[in-house]
Length: 272
Image (tube, rainbow, N blue to C red; front, top):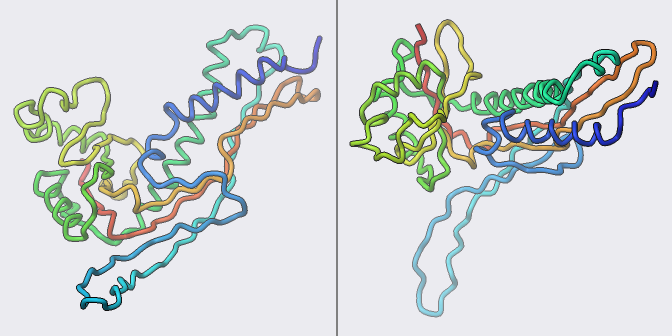
């Protein structure tokens, strides 16, 4: 009996893991600023301040904006997700079982990616609303006003992530769920728990932090958080004769950092 997996199987398995990670593993990676192919253990994200325009005299010097340039550093951490596959079990499995194992590894790494991004969002000091109430219309509008006060661009790159309970609370708001307010094409009933409202993509997420029955939701701009990738998801499959099994190891190297605290608003919500 051969002691190695067919190379076609290995390549197909790697493709399935990567596809599952991109498709369903991480919800938040597309919502933040991402830098790939990072070399080294850290990387830097640039932060540019506001410029001021001014007049000039005829033939005078063009005024300098004196824009402030700063940067923040993101540290990359290595993460792994592995599983044993018994040789005799392989004889009994089919393509669907292989896909289940591929998905399991990809989803685990995807959840870790979201954890890193959420941890970065949590560093923002800006909080609106009382933790003794759920996600009310007043709390949403308060966060909307604060983002405006911080001059956060309303350019289609704002995102809000809320828990399942808060999503249910939003569905009770006619402004969020009624076609009379948002139109037929923006109704949140089309099989996907994401929709555009107030110029923001709202996303239901099950991994938001909860403490003492209070879940923290976030409203932010894409440029406010940086996500660094040193290594994309990689799969390695090796045979271990002493165990009569293959070990499937998935790994990645990533990190996340808060770039601009003014671009993130936290909304604590009571979750009874």
